[in-house]
Length: 241
Ligand code: HEC
Image 1 (cartoon, helix red, strand yellow):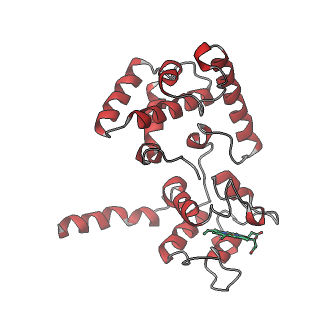
Image 2 (cartoon, helix red, strand yellow):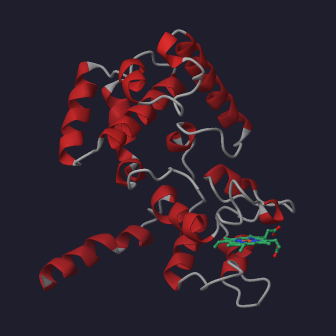
Image 3 (cartoon, rainbow, N blue to C red):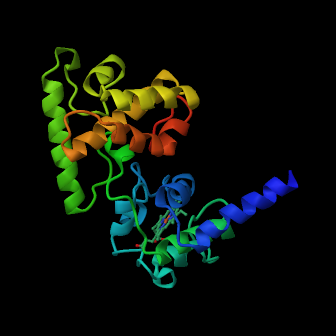
C-alpha cells in the first residue's frame, strides 16, 4: 500500500511542475464550486462570469481579471489570495485552499489556456458568449443542427443537440461502425447508464457538427469520452450550473 502511494506521488506531483495544468480538470471545478453562484449564469457580480474559460478571460465590467502568463498581475489572484474582508473572493465561506490558489496561479502562469470550444458547453443550451471566432463556429454548428432536426418529424420543436434525447439521438448521432464499437465497449467498461450513453452521443454529434462532418466518426466518440465530467456526473445533474 505504501509503495503504491509512493508511486502515485511520484507520477502525479510532477504534472503541475511540468506545466500541465488543464483548465477543465484543475480550474473549472474551483470556479464551479466556489465562484459560479455569483459569477455564473444566474448572477454576474461585477459583470464577471466564471462559468466558461472564454468568459473568465473576457473579464469583468472593469476589464480583464486574468493576465495570461502573469498571475502576480491578475486581479483574480489578487482577490482570491487577499484576506481583506469585503475584497477577498469568495466573500463568503472558507477562503480557497493554498492548493486551489496554486492551481489557479499555475494555470495563469502557463498562459491561461482554455479549450478552443467546450463541446460540453456547446451540447447544452446557449450559455456565455465566447470570442467572435468561437461564436462563428458555434453559430455554424447550431445552424447545421437546426437544419438537421427540421428534417425529422419526430423532432418537432427541436433545434439543437442539447434538446435531443434518447431515440432521436440514436438516429441523428448514429456513429460509423468503429465509433459504435468504441462506444459500446466504453459503455460496458464505464458502466454507463442510458443517460450517460446519450450524453456521450450528444457531445460526439456536436463535435462532428463543429467540423461539419455528416457522420459521427470514431474520433468524435473518443473525444467525447475524454470529457470525463460528461460520463462521471451523477444522474439527473445538469452539466453546468
Ligand atoms: C457570494 C458571492 C460571490 C462569490 C461566491 C464570489 N464572488 Fe467574486 N465578486 C462578488 C461581488 C459582489 C463582486 C463585485 C464587488 C467587488 O468587486 O468586490 C465580485 C467581484 C469579483 C472580482 C473583481 C471584478 C473586477 O471588476 O475587478 C473578481 C476577480 C472576483 N469577484 C473573483 C471571484 C472568484 C475567483 C470567486 C471564486 C473563487 C468569486 N469571485 C466568488 C461576489 C462573489
